[in-house]
Image (cartoon, rainbow, N blue to C red; front, side, top):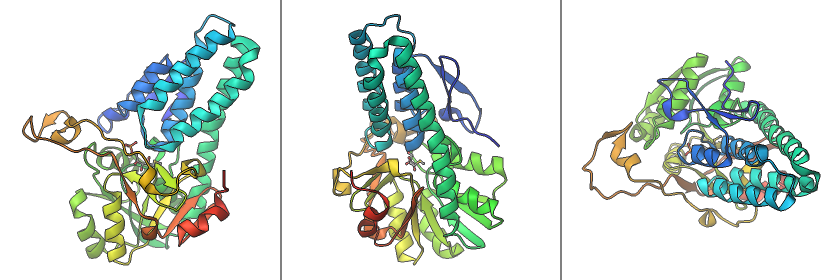
Length: 347
Ligand code: MRU
């Protein structure tokens, strides 16, 4: 099954509206950089690598409909849209990484006028998408080596095709393991507050006929022990130089439970998710989202309307709880902070 999470279609960025899954597979079409920024902010498109691809395509839109060859005018629009897109979500480093790549290409091509810039930006955005897909496949190949012939695997949130240009990181490892004939059963915590596990990972697994069981987030530790889970594998939004990993809120708790039960805790992420400019996870900005995500489920109130709320979207798992990080350049073994430079080069 091919899932076209983000694609360029003739002057339009077409995105699966992930807010509507699993009930309907609907698409939204963006025609401006600001519309892409909105789609990223409101979670129509989410997942670190997919956000990067959408951001890159948003920067193509930024100048696509401008009717000028004036370098200053092109630059002003590009800068303005870049700021909007970058502000949409602060934690996933892939967003800034993709925007930096696009800005580099813009700077080189700016003198060529509108046509030249359009062409160069579109090629770069398409390259970012194609590279992401290829990297996910390679991550899957490496990661599958960590999974036994018959395995019970727990994942979290959605690190699948919907979170990338296709295939997925953590779910990509599961897909690749299955492709190699391994018997995998996946346990999927629902992932409150916005239920990426129940809505998105469950949708991908059911579509693909991979055996899976949905559980409440609070059931994870119990299920790890009772089902004798073989490993936990998750994605990442940003990984610091010491190997600390930011991922969906609740990941840290899973890592602690996994360690308590002697279960390996794996992270799967492309090299674009590493932020070598920061020494530890303490420097990772953690997005706080609106209270309605916690007070409501799918628009239905589940708490008093004026109940105070904290809604951090991500947490940081200390490197010491991470058994390995699977990248497209190979596997970073434990201790991941110490072994990371060998695979992820210094800036
Ligand atoms: O808030 P989200 O849905 O964007 O959070 C997504 C995650 O935390 C994913 O695990 C992470 O981005 C990796 S996706 C390959």
